[in-house]
Structures are given as C-alpha cells and as structure tokens.
Image (cartoon, rainbow, N blue to C red; front, side, top):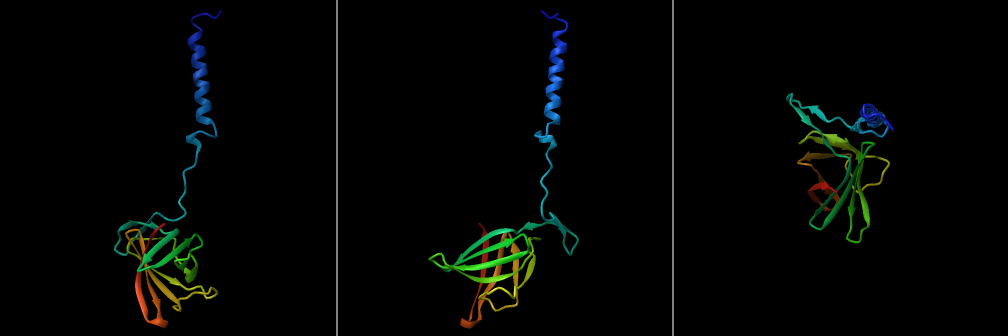
Amino acid sequence: MMPKRLFPWILLLIALGFLAVVLFSPRSPMNKKADVLPYPTVQTSPTGLVLPLVPLEGMWYSQNDGTRFAAEVTGDKRIKIAIVGQDGESLSYWDGSFDTSAMPDQKITSTKNKEAFCLSVDDTKDFQVKDDKLSFEFKMDSIGLTKRVVMARA
C-alpha cells in the first residue's frame, strides 16, 4: 500500500507526462505548420491603397443566351476556355497566359498560346476581375458576333 502523501505526487507526475506527450507529439496541433498560400494575399494599387488579391485558380462557368462556357485557370498561369454544347461536347475557344491572382477590378491581358488550336483569332484577350466574377469579350468575327461573357466560380 502506498502512503497518502505520495499519491498526489504520482498523479502530478502522470499529468506532467501526459502534458509533455500532447505538447511535443508530432501529431499535436501546436506542431503543425501553417498553410502557405501559393499567391500573394495583398497588393498595392497605383493609388497606394493595399488591396486583397482575388485568387483566380480553378474552374469558372457561364451560360449566356443558351451558350455555355467553361474555363480553367491553372497553377502554371494559363487559362483555357471552351464553348460547351448541349450534348456536352466542347470546342476550345481560348488558350493563353493568365495570372492566378489579381486585384479587384483589375484588367488582365492574356496572350494566346500560338501552339494551341482555338476558335478565337485574337492574339490577346482582356479579362476583367470584379466581384468574384471573371468577364471577357466573346468575339466571332466570321459571323459578326460580339458579346460580354461573365463567368462565376464552379
């Protein structure tokens, strides 16, 4: 049988051992590294204001007047836009350079990938970032069609 004066010390020793395991365990939340964002989170505007950047990477969709568009902004700073038919088949409309983050209300100019087949005949295309939406001018010069396409996140 153990003396009553020794019992609190043994409990304290067990509690300290448990605390040490929790604090120094590799699985402890205190030992986890913070997630690092792959893009800067703020940028200084031309007027000197610091603005948060809008992350653009991922899938974007739009449906305008029965015409559906699907776009993907990839981590290698590219954007690919496809026109999607009602049967699910798609045609490549644009493939070009693109920023993965931008300031709100910023215009991004994309340069066409010359090696990719695209329906667009433009060498560059301007995109507007506004209110977590991405917009561009859809043009088919051969039939005289021009309209603004506003895309939202998937």
